[in-house]
Structure formats: C-alpha cells, structure tokens
Length: 456
Image 1 (cartoon, rainbow, N blue to C red):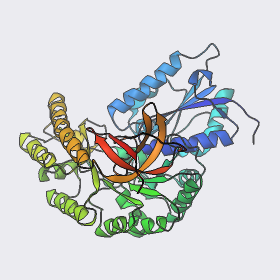
Image 2 (cartoon, helix red, strand yellow):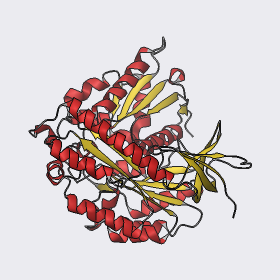
Image 3 (cartoon, rainbow, N blue to C red):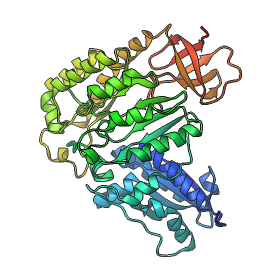
Image 4 (tube, rainbow, N blue to C red):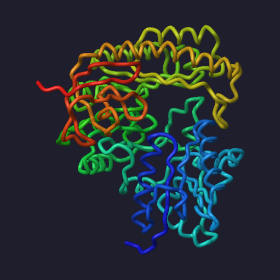
C-alpha cells in the first residue's frame, strides 16, 4: 500500500451509471493511498462526479462546485476535481465550460485510470495535473474499460448493486445528448460482466440491477445482434438467493426470447423499465426512436403474455418540437389506459448538439411544463390503484435500512432510487440489511407499501 495519505472526498451526482463510476473512483483512490473522508471540509481534495444530461443537472453541478470553492479553508483546501458527464459534455460544447469554472481540474472518462496521479500532481502544484474530455460520438477507450473491470468501493444499499453492461448509445435519438457524452455503444465482454456479478454476490449483494444506456441492445456491437438473452442465461447459472432486475430496456430491442428467460426463473424480478418517450407516430418519428405506435402496442402485449403480473416503468417527454394538442392528447389517453406502475415525465429542453434543437415547432416551456404536470396527475391515480391491487399479496422484500417506524426495503416491483419503498412493521428480530424476508402487504399508498412478516 502506498504511503501517500492525503484525505479525499467524493460527491456523486446523477444517475446509476455515475454511481458505478464513483465506486470505481473511490476504490482506485483508496488503493493508491488516499484516505476517504465524508466531509469535504476535512479533505485535501474533493472529486465531484457530475451529470451533464440536462440543464438542471448542469446547474446542480455548478452549484456544488461553487459551494465547495467558497468554503475552502485558509490553506485553499479542498482542491476540486470535476469528473463525469459534464466534463465530457463541455469538451464538445465549449459554451458549457462555465458550469465548471470553480473546478481546479477537469477529468474526463479517459482520465479515470490515472485519477490518483492527477490528484497527486494537483496537490503538488504541478502543471501536469490536467485531464481531457469530449468523446463526442466516439467509443470509450479500452483503458477505461479495463479500469471499469477493476474493484469498486460500494456506496448505498448493502444488498443492492448496479451491474453496468456497457457504455454509450448508438440509437441517436434526436433529443438525446448521450452519444455526445458517453460515445457510441460499446459493450463490456460477457466474461467481465459475469466475473463482476460473481464478485458482487460474494460480498453479500443480493440484487443485481442490469444497466446501460440501452440494456436490450447489449452486445449488438460485438455480435451483430442483442446478447442480453445469453447474458441472462449466464447470470442465472449463479447459485444462491439473488434478484436480477433489468433497467433501461429500449422497446425496439426487447425480444420474446428475453421475456421468456425472465419468466423462466423467479430470481429475475417481474419488472421492466421501458422508456417509450411518446406514442404518437409523428412524434416518435421526429424523436428518431426507430419505432411507431404499433411497436409500442406489440411490446406491451408481448410483456403481458410472458409476464402478466410484471410491474412496468416508463418515461415520456412533453413539449418536444412539433408536439401539438392532438399529439399530446393521444399520449394522455394512452397513459390514462393504466399500463404503468411507475412513470416519469420530462419537459423537453434544448440540448446543444442534438438534432431536436434545429427542428421547427418549438413548444413554449410553460406549455411543456403544464403537460408534464397533467400526465403526472393522471398517473398518480393509476399508480395508487395498481399498488392497491397488490394489497394482501405475499411477496419477498429486500431489507435496506432500519428506519424509525421499521425496516425499509423494496419488493420485486420497486426498483432502487426511482420507485417507492416498503416498510416492514411489527416484530422483526435478528434481521440485517441485505436480508430477504417473506412479507404480507397490509397497506398501500400512492407509491409506498407497509407489510408484516409472513410465515407459511
């Protein structure tokens, strides 16, 4: 172990993909001899893992960096290193660099393998302490993937972890900046994913959440067709009490084979995160989604055939250029049909470098926001009704933390961070975070459940 013992802190912003990177950064810094502290005020150096996907995320990152900068002590500590998506985004869009002006160094994805050296140079005042950034449509480099295969220092739930299948996206949706941030689709090898899954399970992880920008497109860049089904078969050869959950499943690439495998093993949560973004044919075409309303209906019918009790999550965008009242009301009517347990809605924002930016038919931001609120109001009633239908059910619950009113955790129909919680009430001795327990759902609200231990 190196003797270098500077104190470092890490602030993690953004999505689960960032969380996986942050866990890798924590491990790499610790193995290089840096000592982690939770309080930035006590650190010599602070890394801020940023999100750059939307303007709100960029403003959050800028605010965090500014707050850390103005609170520096007399020695000018902590020094600040900005990492992550906003660094990459600003590499291709210089006008976004202002969001990072409080950082001393900006480190892009290609810099992750040498972050400890960058931090050492920064602390020593050497001019070599600078990073890169700006993948702008390219694939991420092999050194990054070798780094991604390295150790992780877990943060968050003891029993749940994200398993990253790859980086980038080649769908090229008109509104989306992910290819400008993370590059084109680049899948990890199946061997690397399975090895990491086994390693995580060996540390006590019970739930593996499969993530990528498009999980259902995993392996297309390596084999010419999706490889999620073979990967699932490999994961299901693992022994032990486990959950597998599929997030970010693009409807264009979801297949009956994938659903058949999900239905074949109860360890695969009957849950799908299926980002649709819209249902009107004209809007789907303008968004560059690669499918129409007919495909949406086919996919939902296919899911109900193989997984009739599955919980479904989706996301929609309101106010995309060209969305008139007719297009919005088709979307509203579709949501009102009640297909989804969980739903998120984003109001379109003009993202630099995306094709949507140049499209005619801009929708006033206030109209887009009102439409978003309307959808969410309709969905709130549906979410409450669908969850109420599960009252009285006996199911498995993954325990996460002990709260004031009982153990908190999640059921198979609740994904981490984005869905509701379940609270286990009544006697519950000898339990630990990461335990699976059988429970009976006794009460539900709009998004959350209450349950009691159940013994057959």
